[in-house]
Image 1: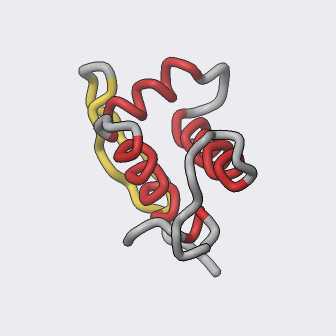
Image 2: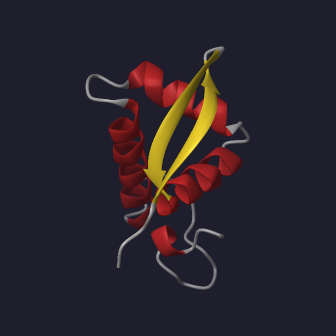
Image 3: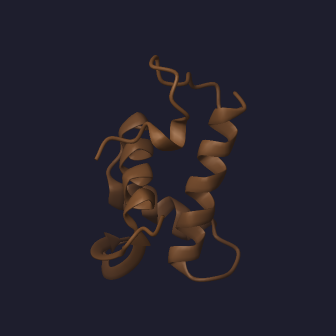
Length: 93
């Protein structure tokens, strides 16, 4: 299954930048930012500030992967969806 890459503009730390991610990663970012009561720009800014190397798109992918991996194993303290779906597939369109 191939997910198309979607390029979006986002403001990070007051600067507009474009980020190219697969739709599944954008959906994951929206879910995470909603759970944390923060904007997508704030979450991307946090990821940008904490990345050690690589480009922003890669840092976001690794962040989302790590978040859902930890959530699936119960490490994040958040609950899995009530319908029993895997967290990575429970993202709303």
